[in-house]
Length: 417
Image 1 (tube, helix red, strand yellow):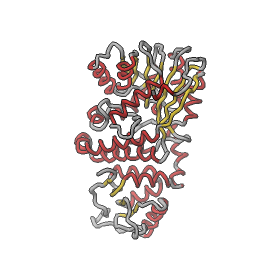
Image 2 (cartoon, rainbow, N blue to C red):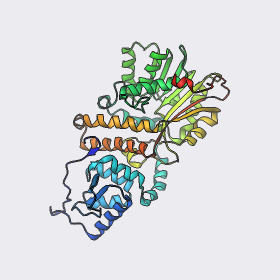
Image 3 (spheres, rainbow, N blue to C red):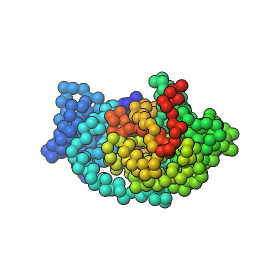
Image 4 (cartoon, rainbow, N blue to C red):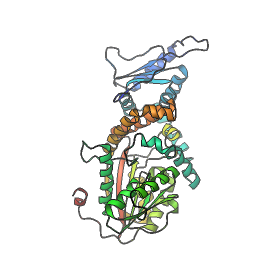
């Protein structure tokens, strides 16, 4: 892959049991015509293993999608959203050319066939466990696959959330530090204050708040590998007296704080536990001057993340709407929304940086895992970038405070000084 150009070396012909290339039947060609038609006028050529296509060959495509066998074709025709991604992951679908063009076309032209599976997927998502043990398993499957892996393509501070590109020419490192400072200014942190962070990743935000704003932080996380590295980095920075990293679930948070912050954790809570998070905030936040910030991937309407993402990348994850967060987390505990910002395009840019770094490290990733893992994570990063570019996903920062807190800012000037 060079830039957005993606290709895999794999035979485009599917072999029959006799070893000879499988011929496309009329029904195969009808199905590929249906898939091609579902993409509208997008410059994406969909073809079968023998080259059969209904794409207008007078126009040069930006990408070619080759479906390698009849079994994959039937699965994609039945449930394109899941089986397209799974086919690419398994290698039975090969994309040559601009991967983002293919994904953009898919997002903009979601077929009715895909929509038929939404109801089933919603029911399936309800069965995913967000209990204390279930949450630990979900987090372990994504975040504990190895710090060495994430160090290959994240920034030096290992910030695995949306960056803030205050200047378009910023490096990823600069934009991630700008994001952390943006959050601190929103919270109006003061030296000596106490902060609780729910879901702290590898500790960059907690260490930044302590080092640059003079606060003390208790940060909670159930990823063992992340907490271990976070403690190491705090010690290296001389912040161990100010920052405590606790390997425990957010539901077990105790103590009190002046500011409560959660960056990239809400997506793992599960809708059925939103009030649990709200209860934690309510019991720990100073009722007079307390304030907080939730930073999370969201949607404009309720819908689970794709089953492929939940199977391959983020088990149990859910991107909520603003309304779900307001009614589920904040309103039941009399917590008032102060400000909302949508950083959707900032996240698309963040993912573009991550994808380029991932590609540069592709050989190392392949040596650590295998080709299927590389294909899955490439598709996840590129698909996520496309989702934010097309407005399928959003990145919300919601600032809130206790309802009776009169120390809220009069203007937003403090954000940009």
